[in-house]
Length: 279
Image 1 (cartoon, rainbow, N blue to C red):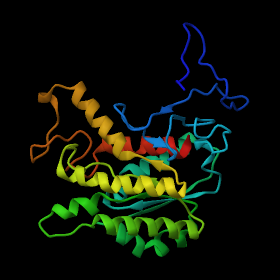
Image 2: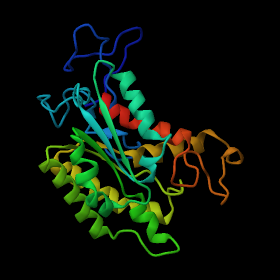
Image 3: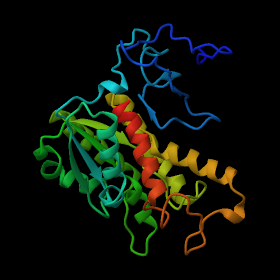
């Protein structure tokens, strides 16, 4: 099944895809499975070539909810995570503003629940207080960087692969049992070095998250894929002598220290999440 193509001077065919009366004809954004093409920022986790809205090869009847149907007026969105999520200004405040602008007809409430240094176990410890007690409708769960990054610090830390998988699965189970809808957010990158040891170790956690999302039928925003694609694009667009460097001599396109976001990194996170939450 190939993406629809535009004839010279003609519109993109819309056969088989839903239209909302009174709206501009929908143009699908296509998601490819992992290959030479970078993975999409947003996907429902069942695989296959899928448009963001409407029917797809793995959902021919179009029964899966469209992305734009995720949010409704009165929803409370909680941003749960570590210091990247805690940052103010950061991606969460930017995303909240963008959601308000993108869906002005919705009355949304936002809860900011990021705490620096957190790992998956910390999220479990404070889940009742910071998420469930807030009358939360949706929660974006952004965790995993410290679980890997802290393995390589001066003081041993981090989370083992087995403990991360068990903790993450329990986190999703408790959210679903409480009636809160989780929105899986994969970790970004460590040091913007896609071939580095930290990002190699991160692949195990990414696979675990994607597997759990698929198993439980949860929506997922693949920020790691988004950052990998963006870093590769910046490297290709600029000569090496123009690459911005940090104090340690490493490339810094989207982070200040290899982990925490600069304005471009916050914008990249917010844009990817906006596609998922607002459609």
